[in-house]
Amino acid sequence: MEMDKVILGDNQFFAVNHLSDERSRQQAVRFKDDKAIINVLDTAMECGVNTFMCTTHDRIANICEHMRQSSGKYSDFKFYPCMPYAHKYANAVTELGILGTLKAYLPGNLLSVVSKSGIAYARKDFPALMELLVDAEMKMFRGLNTPVIFLQNVMTDLLYGLGMKEILVHFAEYIRKKYNAEPGFITMNLPQMVDFCEENGIDNPVICSSINKIGFRMSGSIERYEKYLRSDKKFRPIAMQCLAAGALNPQEAFEYVGQFKKIESVLFGASSRAHIQQNYNMINSLL
Amino acid sequence: MGMSHCSILGAHPDVEVVAMCDTDSLLQSAFKKLTSIKCYTDYKKMIEEEKPDAVYVVTPTKLHYEMVMFALEHNCHVFCEKPFSLDYEEGKTMVAVAKARNLVNQVGYCNRYVGTFNEMRRLLKAGVIGKPFHFMGENYGPVVLKRKGGTWRSTKSNGGGCLFDYAAHVLDLINYILDDVAIDAKGTFMPSIFSSDVDDAVYSTLIMESGLRGQLAVNWSDDTHRKATTSLKIEGDGGKLEADTTTLKIYVKQDIPEHNLVKGWNVKYITDLTPQVFFNLRGEEFSLENDNFIQCIKDPSLENRNTFESALNTDFIIHKLMDDASQQ
Image (tube, rainbow over all chains, first blue to last red; front, side, top):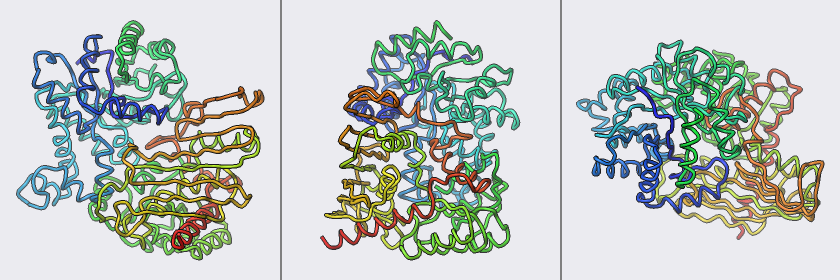
């Protein structure tokens, strides 16, 4: 499965800005309505972008519904879902506790031994619980193209640090089997994750990580990342935060990424036609 | 927070996580089935059997004292989550015991490891804004947005409430950046907005040991912020410093070439102020604080940025704020 070189992200729609809280506020106001998000996606398509990488935020469900209803227009459009939407679960755990959160997000009655969730919970069958949570998150994308499905970095890196290998391996297997899609891992720790996948038989995983000229959010060292990106290790890198939250200009940022033959795609967030078109053109010519 | 620390430590090259203690049965089975970490439900038994070098106390604040003391008495270095203690006298005892036993001790005020705040502290010390005459510390976020309780955060006796759980961060940051100690509070107002038993916001005037004064404004029922937003402004006779976790703005009335500052506004971003970390889970500051604790255990001559003692100063002003609010 070939991935598009250019992938649009969704941070800008949900007031995530790594450089400025004031900018987040402006974004929150601009994208208050779903229509504003759809307009940007339509603009991106006109610029040539056909892949949208997004969290499983409640509002994405509305965007998906819009696309299903006008299917002809979006038949080539691809979603790369990223789950779980961490804030949703973090808030739920704070408010409802772990059990309460599972009750709220899993289908069926968790305390009944006849529902799939109930059986998995009673047996403390964590891989089965994970499958149910993945299915719950994937519901909003039914009928749409989701060729790569990602685990968010908060979850990838948490499980990695805790040594809960089985869940990461099972995620990869389940995504391939049930959704006929490629498993992806977003991580703040690319080298560790590449080694982990190699050691645990996750073959050729898609790994999305910060890759930029100034080493921002490249844990360990930029040199270590570069070594992995030049190695013959089997993984499919997607570069994110190439602009280092705005510290770099697009030309130098994408030139840097372009020197690594291994990098298949670049993820960026933008909402104006000029920015999207500029980034699209540069990435296509430099990657 | 416990899971995050556990994961960061699990990825630390110098640490072996041997055991965890929790009473939640789901968490217990997850650790038993999926990790090689031993599980206990009795922390005393865990410390006695495992004889660890260091212990992380990541429980509701009410339980800190007995757990920290037990760990210290068993010669463990201790990392304790914030706020340190609900009872000032108990806090003093923990400081004294840790000191007497020469054990490394740290409290989880993670803002002390954020690049923008550290640069602010450095520039303030260097005198770029001259003599400071006022500060403003703020912290807003969407924690309690509905009228219902249910967790320990909604119970005063467990250390819940905006003052203990949220304002503590910015109070500690004020002490750290100003390199001073808040000793008194005036005009304190702590409204409950949604909670029935605890405060949801804290507003006050703080007085520092040096005589410097400033305002505190904290609200954890503020859904205009997507996540916790902490900021500090300091005004001096030569300029102004404004920092949050992403940006540091510096206004100076003249060029200061030795610090690369030009007359007027200067902006520094977190991208240029963040050191590399060994592993990143939820932000570099969490990795840095854990690493600081571990490195201090390996080499006690290193600077510990976040001791029990400094956290006790934060507890002190928390109690002053409570006393002052009750008199209003």
